[in-house]
Length: 179
Image (cartoon, rainbow, N blue to C red):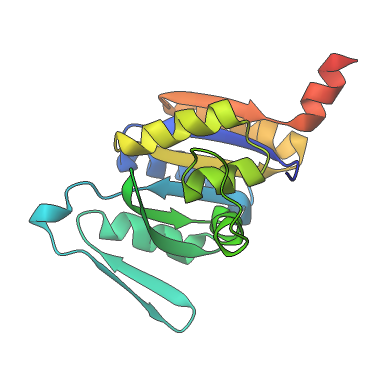
């Protein structure tokens, strides 16, 4: 398991998650370190689709403008059908971790592909289960990955954006506090 630092926030709506991203951007957080995960749970009333033109992925559906904006701003984008969760959209570096878990068949007992990607990044399994549950209940995950000072700064910004939950995951801080 790799050891990365990350702050993970859970938001009830895509509007709240989008506002948090804007706050992080205004504060100078590197957008290449952000990942966002969520699903469009009301697809039965709207056409949903995605396609790739060149190196840019397009999505349309109820939250198409939301995802389209992130896919132009964040590094990496993907659409996964995850058993037990449903259709999930991901933008940011987390995409590479999920794909790595899938390609390497590195799935960890009881975790979805998204959970395996989070676990591979160094998120503890109990927190991964909590985040998978949030996705099942139509919440959105926003993550900032990076050095301790950056994730601590991001956490302080995120805490002021009304997340349902926010956690800092850092093996570096655990090692320091254990001394």
